[in-house]
Image (cartoon, rainbow, N blue to C red; front, side, top):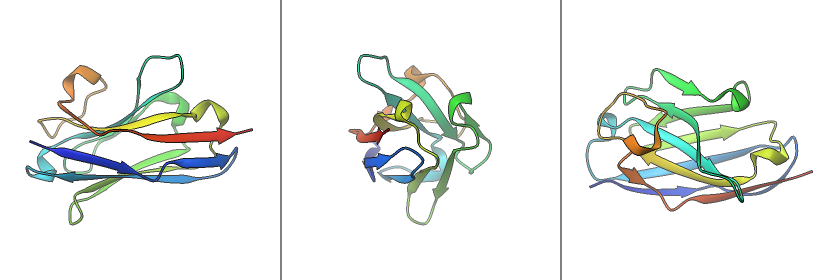
Amino acid sequence: QVQLVESGGGLVQAGGSLRLSCAASGGTFSSYAMGWFRQAPGKEREFVVAIAGSGAPTYYTDSVKGRFTISRNSAKNTVYLQMNSLKPEDTAVYYCAARDTRWISLQQYSYAYWGQGTQVTVSS
């Protein structure tokens, strides 16, 4: 069983930056592909980015390419999401998720483990 705990959310002005962290416990960290998803108010949860168990490849949704960067630190069992040039439309609850395989997926249903979410609010 994998437990995931996100941190790093907050309120930031448009154009600013935040770094989200997701600390994982249980299991072998490198065996799990990790993903970040987000859910804006009144909208369905959507895929943002994923990273394979080895650290590559990664896959980003088009709206965050060039602005967000995912990385993972096996020594700390932590995955990070560096978010730069934030826009008001990035406002959402961000969720970290893990799959029972090292290969990435864009599909939410394929992720077995989820964190509690962290709020990111970008003001205009």
